[in-house]
Length: 463
Figure 1 (cartoon, one colour):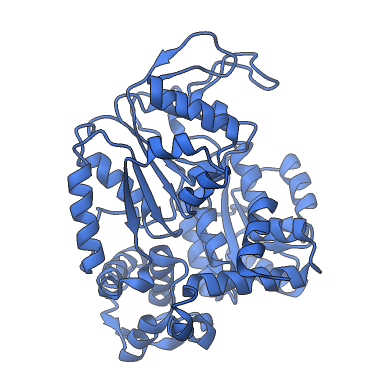
Figure 2 (figure 1 turned 180 degrees about the vertical axis):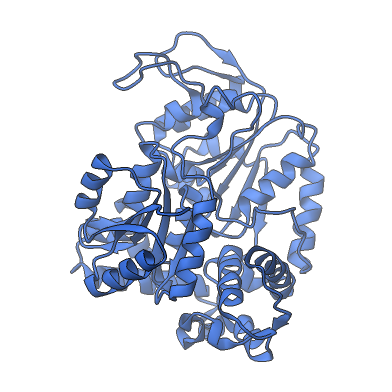
């Protein structure tokens, strides 16, 4: 898109100037700022085709920029720049609506390729296109972007864990049972849920995917169940909720543990009575919807501690599936790597044949905190940077080579903690030290609420 307008939000002024000059040499118009507050003012005064924002900023995080774009329905795209320690946040940004994320240090050619590709993508939307009357009858509701492998057909893994998962999917899909899908970010929970829908008797109906983690507490009820005109300030018209949109099909609620207690009550009623009532409405609306939920938290513990309604948990948990992290199913690693290599070749117009033995060994020992999404992005980046027939380690992010990111680093303590917990604890300690133990700031940077942070501090015994 010639002369497209970009807003760059980066507090490292030297780094920002380099990016600005590079993009302007490639025919992009670039405005820059170092603070979120200034960026919001600039967004009110001008329209941008693309926003490139660092995650860690002096007065907040890049996620706040993305959330504002989504909630205000701004017609623009967002690319998040992160460090590898923020990989899970980057994955979550994709679920919320980011076009892409890239990691520091940013390679200029990689940045340009990512920007060029972003310009070919539809802008981030605050609401699904299905709410638009022009498209409502022809498209099914879905999340703007997903953190999973979701650009092609579903691929069954070759590991014993993946084969068993596929067997369970085939067993539960034809039933009407509610399903809980457990697993870390990036392991394909939404893709698994859509697979269940496609193999069910509801496959001809809509599949509606909602990221509950991106719903504000004030508007979650409206998004799920709809509202009538005048129900609250800003309710200028009647709104159809996602449950009503999913009638006759399947609704998928990701990060279900983020729903407020009030919304949990409404959800329980919807399951028990097969009816919903819009916010501010007086009439019950019958619904015929199958519910699949996903979480990377322990809902059983949350229900016992009172953080999640126990009766709702038992209603939802008629059948549970586990999406195993990539680091625990080595048999799938190169199966998916070859698929992603083929996709990257097609996307970038390249013909890379494979991976060097050294790269294969690095892949085997890396812990893959971002799971399949991270694998896909690393391979695409490597394909872009590779000029020979095979990908060598020079094309990989330097973080993959660090000992602390090795899956074998903590093997001696696996009987006490998983490698994921070790990394999570280290990240929390690092962030607390950076903000001088201000827990509100730490929770904001880590993109979790204060209550969750306190629970994790207690869990890991952090002073």
